Amino acid sequence: MAFKCPHCRAQSVSLKDKYKLGWWMTVSCPNCGGRIAAFPWTLLIMTMLYVWNLMWWVGLINFNHSYHYLLYLAICWVLLDLINIYFMPLCRLERPPQS
Image (cartoon, rainbow, N blue to C red; front, side, top):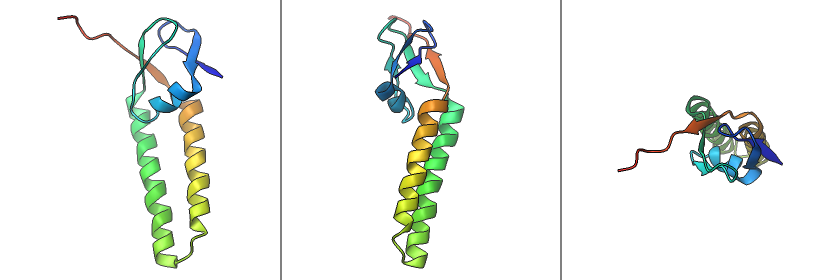
């Protein structure tokens, strides 16, 4: 499965690269060499949801002394990962000026 590069519009961004983009990394398009990143505002919202997910379920584990909440944490984490992969918009990064 490949995703569309915002530079060349080719389906060349791999699933692994798209997953890396969800963790504040940048990748290069294998087709055109353009630098790609995830859109920062939606990435910020997703990061806050990951932190909230972790704090919420770990808090419930701590207060209720029941470890079945770990299953809920894992399910929510996978759902957030799927949202992060399939719905995160990509943006172009311009090349830094040559010195």
